[in-house]
Length: 131
Image (cartoon, rainbow, N blue to C red; front, side):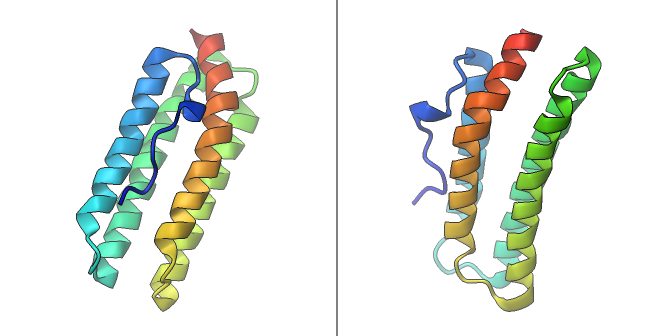
């Protein structure tokens, strides 16, 4: 089972950006697949932490590019990034506090809905402007 399946609706229309995003989803899926069905609470926490770290690193790079270019929608774009990171952090905290059993479904749902909107609109515009 994969966490997130790459779909055409995630595409921004910019080949390099789409490749990077598809690769990131692939990494998340590889991490998820490595858990197996009998993952311990510690393995799940490690997985969620790695997801958070990888997405945070991707955002930091994107935000650096936006600041350097004086991107006119930086604040809104960064706010989207912060919102997703907060949602992932909430999932991590709920799992840590009580053995949160549906972390995978909630994480997949959050990431899928976010990827569709953010990739298609914010990232597509960003990379066309910075292009």
